[in-house]
Image (spheres, one colour):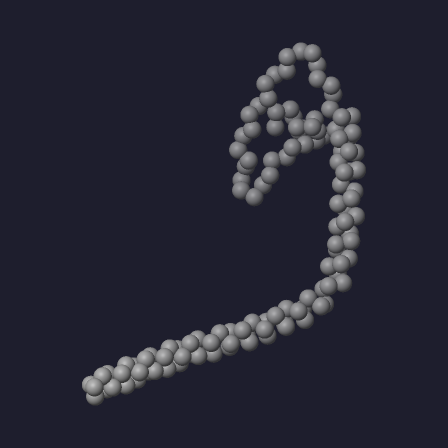
Length: 128
Protein backbone atom coordinates (compact mmCIF):
# COMPACT_ATOMS: atom_id res chain seq x y z
CA UNK A 1 0.00 0.00 0.00
CA UNK A 2 2.86 2.36 0.79
CA UNK A 3 4.25 1.78 -2.71
CA UNK A 4 0.93 2.86 -4.31
CA UNK A 5 0.89 6.10 -2.28
CA UNK A 6 4.48 6.91 -3.30
CA UNK A 7 3.72 6.25 -6.99
CA UNK A 8 0.59 8.44 -6.75
CA UNK A 9 2.55 11.31 -5.18
CA UNK A 10 5.27 10.96 -7.87
CA UNK A 11 2.65 10.96 -10.64
CA UNK A 12 1.00 14.06 -9.19
CA UNK A 13 4.40 15.77 -8.90
CA UNK A 14 5.27 14.94 -12.53
CA UNK A 15 1.89 16.19 -13.77
CA UNK A 16 2.19 19.37 -11.70
CA UNK A 17 5.73 19.97 -13.00
CA UNK A 18 4.60 19.39 -16.61
CA UNK A 19 1.68 21.75 -16.15
CA UNK A 20 4.01 24.39 -14.63
CA UNK A 21 6.38 24.12 -17.62
CA UNK A 22 3.48 24.35 -20.07
CA UNK A 23 2.06 27.42 -18.32
CA UNK A 24 5.49 29.08 -18.27
CA UNK A 25 5.89 28.42 -22.02
CA UNK A 26 2.35 29.71 -22.78
CA UNK A 27 2.98 32.81 -20.64
CA UNK A 28 6.20 33.54 -22.53
CA UNK A 29 4.37 33.28 -25.86
CA UNK A 30 1.53 35.49 -24.65
CA UNK A 31 3.99 38.11 -23.40
CA UNK A 32 5.70 38.18 -26.80
CA UNK A 33 2.32 38.43 -28.56
CA UNK A 34 1.29 41.29 -26.25
CA UNK A 35 4.48 43.19 -27.15
CA UNK A 36 3.85 42.70 -30.86
CA UNK A 37 0.25 43.87 -30.48
CA UNK A 38 1.41 46.98 -28.64
CA UNK A 39 3.83 47.80 -31.45
CA UNK A 40 1.04 47.20 -33.99
CA UNK A 41 -1.32 49.47 -32.07
CA UNK A 42 1.30 52.25 -32.18
CA UNK A 43 1.61 51.82 -35.95
CA UNK A 44 -2.17 51.90 -36.37
CA UNK A 45 -2.37 55.15 -34.36
CA UNK A 46 0.35 56.66 -36.57
CA UNK A 47 -1.43 55.58 -39.76
CA UNK A 48 -4.73 56.96 -38.44
CA UNK A 49 -3.02 60.29 -37.72
CA UNK A 50 -1.67 60.41 -41.26
CA UNK A 51 -5.06 59.44 -42.72
CA UNK A 52 -6.85 62.28 -40.87
CA UNK A 53 -4.87 64.75 -42.96
CA UNK A 54 -5.92 63.24 -46.31
CA UNK A 55 -9.54 62.28 -45.54
CA UNK A 56 -11.04 65.53 -46.94
CA UNK A 57 -9.00 65.11 -50.12
CA UNK A 58 -10.20 61.52 -50.55
CA UNK A 59 -13.82 62.65 -50.30
CA UNK A 60 -13.13 65.27 -52.99
CA UNK A 61 -11.39 62.70 -55.20
CA UNK A 62 -14.35 60.32 -54.83
CA UNK A 63 -16.79 63.09 -55.84
CA UNK A 64 -14.72 63.99 -58.90
CA UNK A 65 -14.33 60.30 -59.77
CA UNK A 66 -18.12 59.93 -59.66
CA UNK A 67 -18.52 62.84 -62.06
CA UNK A 68 -15.95 61.37 -64.44
CA UNK A 69 -17.51 57.91 -64.23
CA UNK A 70 -20.91 59.43 -65.01
CA UNK A 71 -19.48 61.19 -68.07
CA UNK A 72 -17.78 58.10 -69.54
CA UNK A 73 -20.85 56.75 -71.40
CA UNK A 74 -21.38 60.18 -73.00
CA UNK A 75 -17.70 60.41 -73.96
CA UNK A 76 -17.77 56.89 -75.35
CA UNK A 77 -20.82 57.70 -77.48
CA UNK A 78 -19.17 60.86 -78.77
CA UNK A 79 -16.01 58.92 -79.64
CA UNK A 80 -18.08 56.36 -81.55
CA UNK A 81 -19.70 59.16 -83.57
CA UNK A 82 -16.30 60.67 -84.34
CA UNK A 83 -14.95 57.31 -85.51
CA UNK A 84 -18.02 56.72 -87.68
CA UNK A 85 -17.52 60.14 -89.25
CA UNK A 86 -13.81 59.57 -89.97
CA UNK A 87 -13.71 55.98 -91.18
CA UNK A 88 -14.98 55.69 -94.77
CA UNK A 89 -17.66 53.07 -95.38
CA UNK A 90 -16.35 49.71 -96.58
CA UNK A 91 -16.17 49.41 -100.36
CA UNK A 92 -17.89 46.50 -102.10
CA UNK A 93 -14.49 45.34 -103.37
CA UNK A 94 -12.68 42.59 -101.54
CA UNK A 95 -10.31 44.27 -99.14
CA UNK A 96 -6.70 43.26 -98.88
CA UNK A 97 -6.00 41.07 -95.86
CA UNK A 98 -4.86 43.04 -92.88
CA UNK A 99 -1.22 42.83 -91.95
CA UNK A 100 -0.63 40.60 -88.95
CA UNK A 101 0.37 42.46 -85.85
CA UNK A 102 4.10 42.46 -85.35
CA UNK A 103 5.97 42.49 -82.08
CA UNK A 104 4.93 45.22 -79.71
CA UNK A 105 8.35 46.81 -79.81
CA UNK A 106 10.76 47.46 -77.00
CA UNK A 107 9.51 46.72 -73.50
CA UNK A 108 7.62 49.59 -71.94
CA UNK A 109 6.18 50.93 -75.22
CA UNK A 110 2.71 50.50 -76.60
CA UNK A 111 1.67 50.05 -80.18
CA UNK A 112 -0.48 52.95 -81.38
CA UNK A 113 -3.98 52.06 -82.55
CA UNK A 114 -4.53 55.37 -84.29
CA UNK A 115 -3.96 53.80 -87.70
CA UNK A 116 -6.63 51.20 -86.93
CA UNK A 117 -9.23 53.98 -87.09
CA UNK A 118 -7.79 55.56 -90.23
CA UNK A 119 -5.55 58.25 -88.73
CA UNK A 120 -2.27 59.05 -90.44
CA UNK A 121 -0.03 61.87 -89.17
CA UNK A 122 0.72 64.62 -91.68
CA UNK A 123 3.64 63.69 -93.93
CA UNK A 124 3.51 59.99 -92.99
CA UNK A 125 4.30 57.44 -95.65
CA UNK A 126 1.82 54.57 -95.96
CA UNK A 127 3.19 51.32 -94.52
CA UNK A 128 5.18 52.74 -91.57
